[in-house]
Length: 389
Image (cartoon, rainbow, N blue to C red):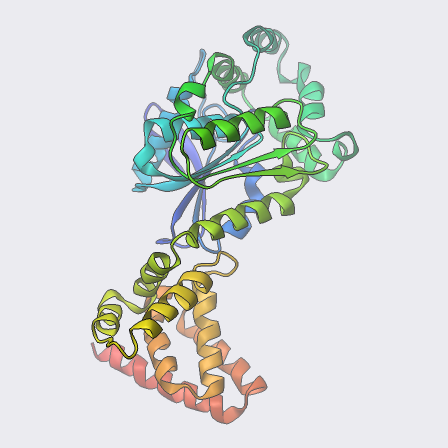
């Protein structure tokens, strides 16, 4: 989709269900949102993944002149404003990670957590960036592509199809966009503000990255931790260079999923309470908790913390899929009360009637026709209630 954000028309790719927690992924210099394709596919199961093309990159309009980190972070804020997004997890690779730091410094209340991949607080030197931009403006993108590709991926990967895709992205980047963003990097020193960030953070880096080497990533991690950011995690991706999202997609995805899952486990009861309300409805949960006595209060806490806070919040399956699994299992076991409860909850989880019918067909095959028949009977009764209003 395209949105007007400030002074430019921005291309944004959005994956995942409406209503899922928002997560923003910002790409690197000379690429576009597609460097996050593999990660977005996994994250979209549980998040609304928002991937804007940076100013002058992909299908987003370019403007002439040098850009600044403040300007690029402002573009992100403007996109989120248009989309009606308040706070989100913000991730970025290379300059995308620098923009994420700048965004977090300017909008701490809108930054739930940071995921910073192959980036730094500063990438020197100003003179080398200025020289690259001068050469680029004189001779075009083709004059820098071989040198850039050699830094993006390891030698053994440079002729692989994904690396050739990276080359195509670079060739498609406008000179104004590349040059403007390059000068934003050249002028940036984010250390003073990054050291004051107070949100959880994941720092990843390829072990063969020469643009933002392991030492730079370690300095970033240390600055965040010493500044008081909670739960700062550091992951080195082996046999990868500057764009491990493409070169080692599974490893990057796993690190991100683990980080996001751990965030949910920080206060499992509170996370579980939020999830339980989101699935079953606030009124039902309020009745269950208010009706607890000394006899079953610990049990209510246990199921909220464990079932809802440690399993339902895991990022490995979308909420609708978990809902269908619960329906199939409770139908198979003859747990009528739980089946009815979770069938009514599908209005909140997004599982459709067609999907519920398919789940019950599976029950018929693997748990028996009587169990599936009972499930269909209960489902039809509840659907009639809903249609009657």
